[in-house]
Length: 92
Image (cartoon, rainbow, N blue to C red):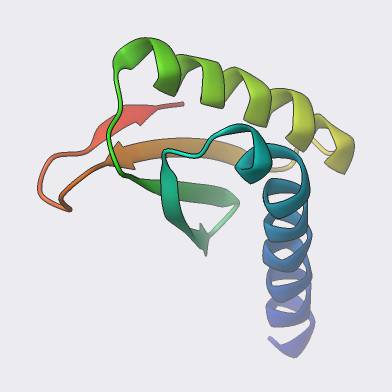
């Protein structure tokens, strides 16, 4: 159990560092993001100041490029976007 938690914590920390350094500087509309890791699924929710589908798709594509640096196909990523916390637009 501890080993699994350590792997999960390390993975979340690595994903966060990649997003902080390579994604956030490119997109000023990202107010914040949250990462949830659950049984091999990593869900990243972006809270946006404002967004459109084209920008969301661009962010998802950039994330795929950056997250490929993890070098593992062991995880399934889900990307969600919201401006108010009520409506979520999901990409996977």
